[in-house]
Image (cartoon, rainbow, N blue to C red; front, side, top):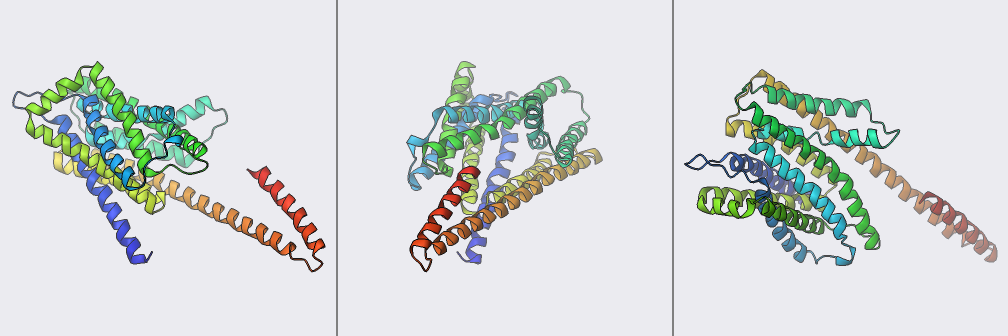
Amino acid sequence: MSDAANTMKMLFGVAGIYGAFMYYGVLQEGVTKWENDAGERLGRAWFLNTLEALANVIIGAIGLMVTGGANMKAISFQKFFLTGGAQVCAKSFTSMAMIYGVSFPVATLAKSAKMVPVMIGSILLVPGTKYTMRKYIQVAMIIGGTVLVNMAKGSKKEAASEGIGLAFLGIALVCDGMVGGLQGGMKASYKELSGGNSIKPYELMTFTNLFMLAIAFAVAMVMGEFLSGMEFVLANPELLLKVSTWALCSAIGQSFIFFTISTFDPLVTTTVTTTRKIFSVLLSIFLHGHKTNELTWAGIGCASLGIIGEMTEKKSHGAKDAKAKKKRQRGDATARTAVSASMEGPAGLVGVGTGRALCKRTAGATGAGS
């Protein structure tokens, strides 16, 4: 593939992720704050996430059909259920936090600190777990920046309501922190059941969202949100359009993420999605008129530095992993060349015997390392 074609594909992926998810953020804030003439709000988080998951399932299923279908024998429904459950809880509690008064900038910045519950859990449950000072500083900067942005509002009028919202945001953060580990287990299970193949992007998107849809729908029905939510949006066409566009943006954005992951290194996607959060916060401030002062900008700057630090750390680790992988591949190639050369000894039988001995040593070394 030429450099020009690579550049065009990258620009296409970046534009799609930025466009879809920045508009998604704008719409999410609009949907949670929207009021009809009577001053009523939708306020049904599980209903909203049912619609969002449904849109993702539809788009994911289309992508799955186009890319050759799913390997059903390798799909662990239990693993997908756990992963989907953690993700839909994280999304729903974030929506509930915003419904209870937490601003989009605060929610977005706080969600970038998902390493906090992971770190706390690892330290408490896994003896000997240690993190670098850089990791502690980065997390502290994200949390500190978020606190500054929240404090900068200075209004105590809805303090009690917002306190509940912040509690929901904390629960969402814990759920977010669980997703990585659960997703890792699910991918490992898929690889084992498929004979060493990695899960395809649209398999991950479709089946994760399928379980998110099932869980969100069940909870929405039990809580009485689904039917009343449908009645409310159908009675308010303006809100119906906002909700539908919001759910569609989520699905389109996910597709662009999977396109970028499958075409380029995952670190490219990490860089794009991380910087997108910062720009989404800025866009929200300008479009929704959030009050800003010196404290607000100091908080955004502090949290942004922490987020960028996390991104560059991942990039550095990714480069080291790639270098180690290449080194292993070169070592394997050298071993194969040595075996081949030994098999071609001038005395025939001596060469074969040496080759067999070297093969045994190589096999033993490979077994010990795996």
